[in-house]
Image (cartoon, rainbow, N blue to C red; front, side, top):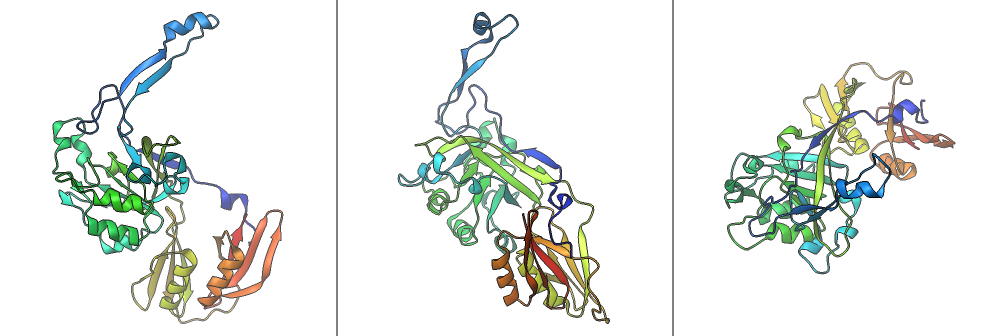
Length: 348
């Protein structure tokens, strides 16, 4: 068995970065009635020249702005006095989140399909409404923008969403004074990112999302540099297992990979996709022959708790082969699935 992770197995792929934030500039209007940012200089280049050696100059800028400027993130303190502020924002709530994009061309309440809700645990839901095309125009401030209603927000919270972002004026309807999306999401500790842009460039699945604000104590909202990351697709996109029962193996490997549900196309073919960005697909095809020898190829599965994951998978039909092996390179546990295909749980 390969077992111990290799340097090649740990190499991160190159990535494409997609900008999702509006530029902040002097005098811009983000939301009607809020003060505009004023950008200036504490120390100009001209003023700095007398302080340093010949040819050395610096610019130290200043900005006076409302926290709700440009593309910004709301924490619970924005809505609740006892909620955590920007300094208390967990990075796992705003950085390197699996991104799921929902698209709509309609105004009003956005519908989130059930199949999307089933795949939201721990993910950032990004709502692409194309309202950002109106940025910088009076139309952007119209109450006709898309938003999330109370029922949808409750379903997102029940689904375990980690963050919700939108590219419109407000995640709530601005036709009235109720703010159920802000109230419910922030009460549940789910950050909100508003005034996103360029979501048309982000795939529905396969990217990660990051939107990190400055760590300011005593403040609930601040602008962010929001971006999506798309790993370069690997050459290998699918590994196929021959087997006797495609449904049994597909359901088992869904538990191994943490996938929401396998795709069982027929008695002859089924697939399970690794939910990590650009994760490979594991496929199963029925063949008449049984397994007669050890696999010449097997899968290594990352684990942060090999003993715990081994116990969990054994309850789903796996069998552990020997004990956990550890050395200076890491640890691994050999297992076999319900049809005796070998695989390993590995850790650093």
